[in-house]
Image 1 (spheres, rainbow, N blue to C red):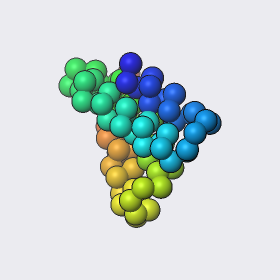
Image 2 (cartoon, helix red, strand yellow):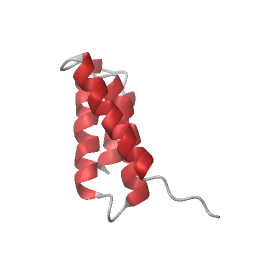
Image 3 (cartoon, rainbow, N blue to C red):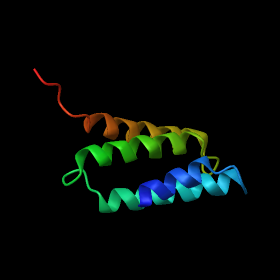
Image 4 (cartoon, helix red, strand yellow):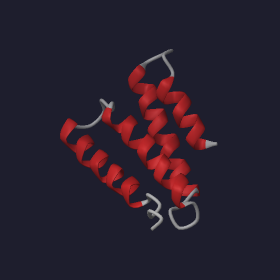
Length: 86
């Protein structure tokens, strides 16, 4: 539910874009606190990816800090990728 809410805020063209991005980030973070990587590995990775996309567009805080956090989130998402069948 929180992941979907984050996506709605992220794509919402109404209102202030910066506020919508902050709401999306908060929603994705709430989703990650419920759907942990231990219990919901793929969903956790998907939410990390969505969070990273929202963080790229974030205007709050410094650009450098945002990019560092974004890189960390995308790296976390990459670790959640299911192993290849072989």
